[in-house]
Image (cartoon, rainbow, N blue to C red):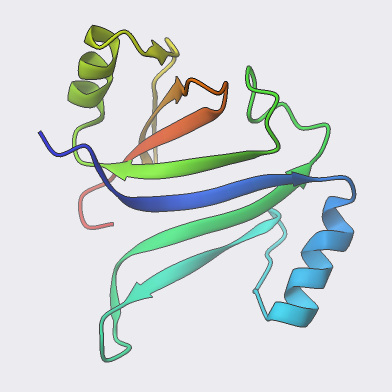
Length: 128
């Protein structure tokens, strides 16, 4: 079974999320949207759009989005078969959170790494 196939997103917290979002927009040209982040569309070697995106966002330092982790960041990894990977991780003794979300964006599950960081696993919908 193939496990991680790529990075689906990078999420981090900031003391002043709106100010940091504005800085990234102004100085690095990231098209920060109202939801606090941007979606980078993948392209092929010739610059043509290719199925897939990588999300990037900044949340408030008070956000509980990464709970139970106390880390200020979370990485979202793309996977091919979320349920099979979660089963394998549990069998290997990993700290897998019970909740699995099935949403309009695909399936999401979470595991806590040995350092206490929450890791998001995402099985995108077909064609994403």
